[in-house]
Amino acid sequence: MTEKPPKAAPKNKSSKLLAVKTYAVQCSNCMKWRSIGTEEEYMDIRSKVEPFLCGDGKSNVSCEDPADVEMKVDASHMWVNDKDGIPRTPDGFKRIMVPRSDYSKIDVYYITPMGKRVKCFSELKAFKETNPEYKNLSLSDFNFSSPKVVEGTISKDSTGGNA
Image (tube, rainbow, N blue to C red; front, side, top):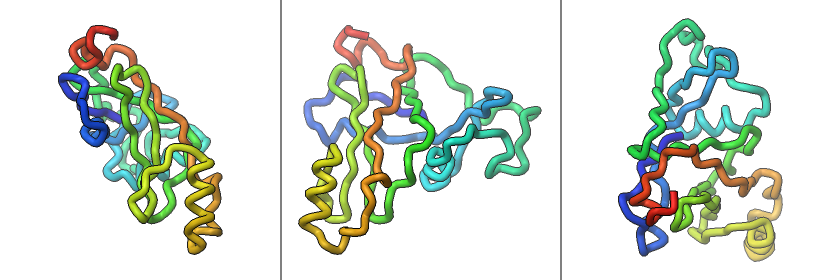
């Protein structure tokens, strides 16, 4: 995924939310990046443990075709790599990513259907206990693993000179 980092560290937490501009996956055969049209499609691919291959979900693309996305490793965009096997976000919930003020790491949160932000499994468990309509919600449908920031994609201006 590629993100556009702010020029300076924002003071307001809500302004630090990453706005995803491009969902992309890398073919494990040819190592080319393929653009994924929607967040839902991306979640489906990300939820699988097996590697992505050209043609998966895009039958008209093969390893012989040029890359859909060029990963420019510079400070114009923040690139982050999600792990494989992250479950599809349950209906009504939203998985969000918030960079720390120094952009060293990205924290993952879920927004519940009631608009509450949760940051860990104990908060999800408490949400289930106070909202009986979600008692059948499985905690295994959530993953708070942080995506890795691709080195070199954060400007020194964004980090206060710590990059």
